[in-house]
Length: 268
Image (cartoon, rainbow, N blue to C red; front, side, top):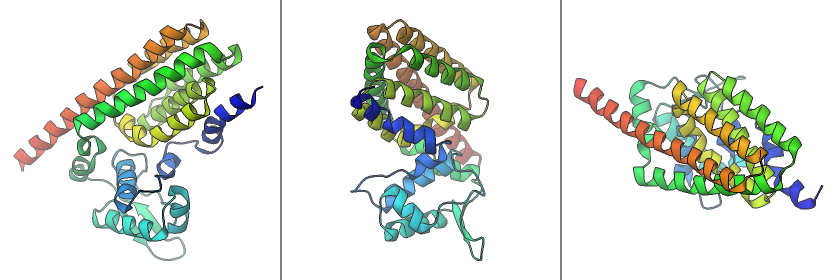
C-alpha cells in the first residue's frame, strides 16, 4: 500500500476511530483567525438543529479551547453569549458545567443556521462542496479497489436504514468521507472533513424529511454503481448532481423557514 494512500485515509481514520457521532465534529478547530462570534455560531447551529441535544453537557472550557484551537478567553466569551441567548446554562457543583437548554420554537427560528445564511452564501457553499465531492468521486473511480467498493456499499446500506435525522447525517458523512479517502488524495480527504463542520448542521434539518433521505440514498446507489464500474465521468457527474440536489432542498427549506417565521410573527 502506497504512502500516499495511507495519508489520504488519515482524515477518515480519525473520523472512524473517534468521531462516532456528528456532535464531536462541532468541536473541530475553527481556524487561527476565528473569533468568539465564530465559536458562538458553530455551537449555536449545533444546538438549534439538534446535533447537541437538550441536557447534554459541553466539554469544559479548557477542553473546548484545545479542540477548537482558540484561547480559553475566546471560549469563555462565546459561552457567555450562548448563556445570554438562552442556549446553554451553567450549573455549579461536583457534576456542574455548561449544559444545552431545551430550544424553544422562537429561538429555533431566530438562530437556525439556514435562516442566518444568505441564499447566495448557501448556493456558493453547495457549489464548492459539489466540486469537491465530484472530483473525489472521479478519482475514487480510477483508484479504489474492489474491497473498498464493498465497504462503501455497506455504509450506504447503513445510511438507507437510519430513521433519525442525526443518525442519517452521521451515515451520510461517513459515505462522503469514504469517497474522499478512496480518491487517495490527502488534501481532498482533509478538505471534506473540514467542510463537514458547516455542512452537517444543515443536513440534519433536511433529513427530517423521508423523501429527501430516500433521494439521497438513491443518489449514493448511483454513485456506487459508477465507482464499481470504474466509470470516472459517471461518478463525477452523479456525485455533483447529488450535492446539487441537496443544495436545492436546503434553499427551499430556508425559504420555508422564513415563511414560517413571518406567519408566527403575524399570529402574535
